[in-house]
Image 1 (spheres, rainbow, N blue to C red):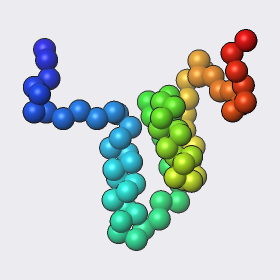
Image 2: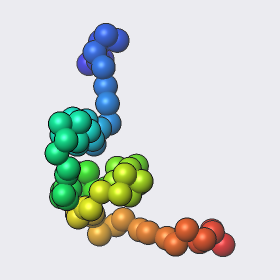
Image 3: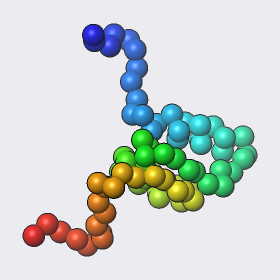
Image 4: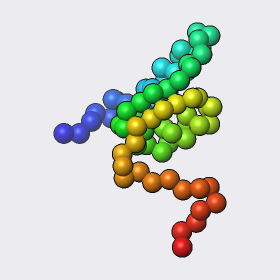
Length: 74
């Protein structure tokens, strides 16, 4: 079944940032973001937490790998 063209689509983690932005627009700081592996599995989500300097704790699957910035494939 196809999604109708007029129905929007966003990444699963985007609504979380919409809520964070709305909360901050009310003058309320978000002290910490805690998520399950469904959010934590996405590098873009984790990166956005970092760039916004939000304190966070995210679950990640055991198959997730991380690398130092200066790491390059060999």
